[in-house]
Amino acid sequence: MVPCSVAVIPDGNRRFSAKAGLSLDAAYLAGFRKVEESVDWAVESGVKSLAYWALSIENFQNRSQLELGVLFALMQAHARKAIESRQFESMGARVKFFGRTSLLPSSLQNDFKRIEDNTAESSAVELNLGVAYGGRDELLTAAKRLAEDARTGAVDPAQVDERKFGEYFYLQTAPDLVIRTGGVQRLSGFMPWHTGYSELYFSKKLWPEFQRADFQDALAYFASAKRNFGK
Image 1 (tube, one colour):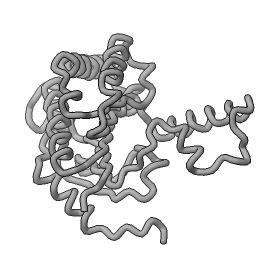
Image 2 (cartoon, one colour; image 1 turned 90 degrees about the horizontal axis):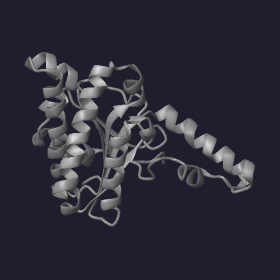
Image 3 (cartoon, rainbow, N blue to C red; image 1 turned 180 degrees about the horizontal axis):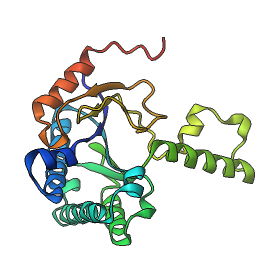
Image 4 (spheres, rainbow, N blue to C red; image 1 turned 180 degrees about the vertical axis):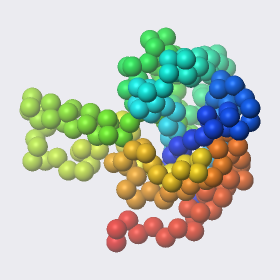
């Protein structure tokens, strides 16, 4: 049994930099390339929806401007390469960037919007990329949006159920499987509304070291799990 939806917390890029004696930008570049590889592994395995946590809102607020500059430059380079090569269109991926993307440099926002527009009609796989994303921030934002719609009469509070509230989140697809690399066994606030019944797989490998065999191990773990959904 292959999970329809997989979410990935690709942890360990900075530790890989120290371990391998690489500059921070070289380590992050290795991490970006690993994302591209892992998308191919997932698609080949039959996964229909993917979500990656590229940058947390806490990282955005607390990392140095130098480190953020490295990340943004790499994101922009990869985004523009993908636009020019029509990379996502060729693989049939519908791309969405989720999180507080309005905090990003305007040129990066524009490139992200262009990718989303270019892939809007694709349907082979969903590819969701969390940038400046935080789970508590998402919950608070969703609650504020719902409260505003209730205030204006756009929604009847008495009719709000889980399905309706779920419409206020960035993504509607709940991951069947969450993979976190780097040896840390927590979700750190990633998609708290969606992951209540997700299977969780933690790898000791740092993200740039994660290999196809490790991904297959995660899928095998999922296949062996008995999913009761509270029953």
